[in-house]
Image (cartoon, rainbow, N blue to C red):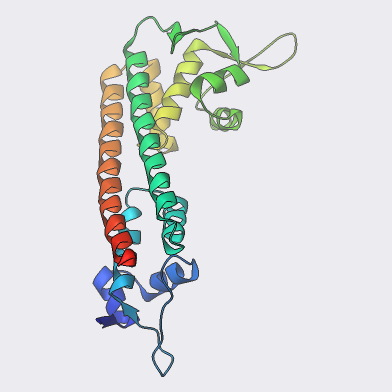
Length: 233
């Protein structure tokens, strides 16, 4: 049986021994044996576990990867596979969303979205429902000066125009794939100035990033299957 010291394993994976210890403390890998002198050592199954973690992290968020690895450690292989399948579904929805928003921007007559007729003024709840986000996100974007609301003269509630809704849809579409706050301000300025070439390039970059993420998700799945097969032997 091939064995590795923590230093050898860390060097092979190009990470620190602290990172390996953290994965162990987070209960992501099989139990780590010790020598007679009480020193840790790793085996081939640990190597595959670490490779799986590192590869999955390139395509999935940390909490998701940790949950997957704990499921596998507990032999809940089907649950881990269904969780991965769920993530594949989410990235597909994200791609569809980016494409839908791009079509919306290119449309000169933005009076409907997803077959829903838009009102001249919408409450924050209505805007959030249309964009598929929480009202707290819109409040934050308004606080940062990305969107503006008007106040209802009768009750003082926030009201958003169709123009501002379009900004909300753009932010919600690109926030995970391309832009930080300052970049987003410039993009929204381009939207107001109708600099559509720049906006289309931004959406193209968003789609490229999603393609990159999808590619690494599949690479992670490949390593995960190897790991599961290893454990089932």
